[in-house]
Image (tube, rainbow, N blue to C red; front, side):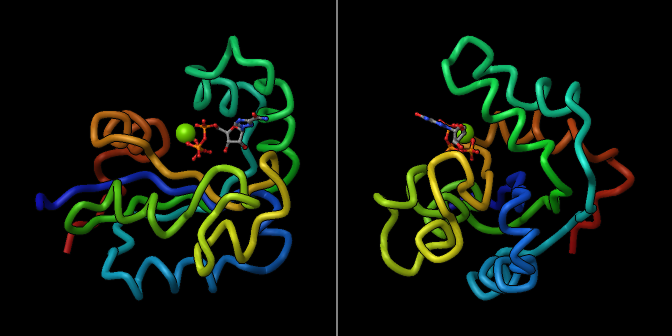
Length: 141
Ligand code: RTP
Ligand code: MG
């Protein structure tokens, strides 16, 4: 498997629950390295731009409102097969359908407040990482 990077966001619900450390610990425990990180309270324009692919979906308005409801923790993760590895750690979008022991099963409340975002492909990961981080903010190791 190739060394990859993926963009991860700990969403406002999980930040409000003081779950940042527990969630980052899962990434590190699975061998994913945090190569960039920042806390940010997204503006409406930033959240709309980030989720622009979902602009026509019925849940877009609720998704943007949720993502700007409080600060988020944004990180770039690096490791072998990082995109899929992160999606496995996250679990299904709807926490009711997420496997036991996944981040969403353990920390998410609903399909709207679902604790984490993770890139869904290596191509989108590159776009999403560049959306939030300058090249000089990435610290490969
Ligand atoms: P994310 O992008 O946040 O990592 O989530 P995901 O890939 O698992 O799910 P995606 O299809 O990309 O949807 C983005 C976010 O929109 C909300 N959503 N609501 N009510 C619904 O049917 C519905 N579907 C999606 C979720 O909060 C999801 O994380
Ligand atoms: Mg997605």
